[in-house]
Length: 427
Image 1: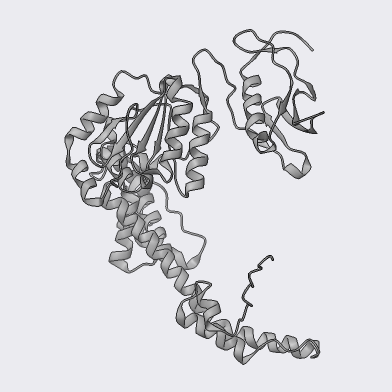
Image 2: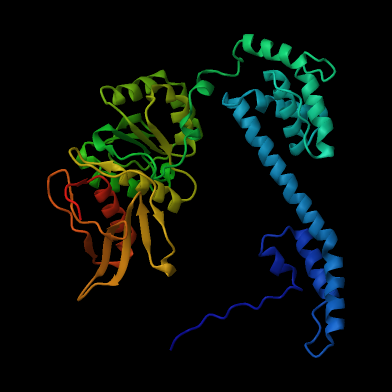
């Protein structure tokens, strides 16, 4: 006998219903009361009566909807100010961040007006012309910031004078070492746009605990099966020893706490150790798969990281972290191989799954005769005959994919293989 779990009925008149949907207790009660006072009429009631009842309920809920909107806006502004304060305290902020906080503290501006104050201040500071916002309510804040930045709209030569001062001004004190160099926490997420790079010139930095990279174990195992056997380099950040080589690293059960992170941050030995692990490597591509306290430690010692072509960081949810790591690893190539670079554009599967890379197109043709799924590689609408790989082996413009779940991976691999191949004969 199959047991079917009964789904609880949606009851808008119950406060518990709205509490379960994330509403605050006072908001949940107000919404439920509006539904109790003005419930839906029976289907047999006239349309006019039903519409009038609905309008009355909407009117009764307007105060609570306004309160919810105000609460959400207050949370948004608090998060924005908190983020700006964190940047300023950590040394990653700039003049504009300082102006935003000054507008809030000095004049009591909310987030939107503090932004306009900072716009005006920065325009005056760097020698730009006065340019008021389009919204009249934001103009006083902009004008106030412009005046605080040294601007004078009544002076005909004001812009030229400020531009000369800006050119002679020394760098601001907030631009410490960490602000001048891009920190790993500010690096972009991986994409398929950068060119494929030999594994011997690639480095991945991981944490030695699952909390370090949201699924670090899977990432490390995938790396060892691909880049690890092709000459790639891995560095592991551990709670006990700090930075170590990932070649023989064994998993640790200890997670990096805030107190231990502070100890690693205060240790100059860690930066020297990280620099030694990277010494002698001609690096073109770095991926940081860290977050939380692990990323904070790496940010502090980031002066040991080289400036190279591609520097990226995984982020957000576990699924996105794994997807970012997969994108980065797919860009690695073995020594002696050649792989086509660029962004692959995918069509909707409902219209027939296709992928394009430059003048090449990978097209799903449906089930293959007998078994598997047929994919063709085309150039200008016809099969891409006449391509050879770096070893001189001709490439077949059709391939059979055994599992439909691997269609996208195999289509992308084939496109990049043809994109890096040599065409030796006309079709």
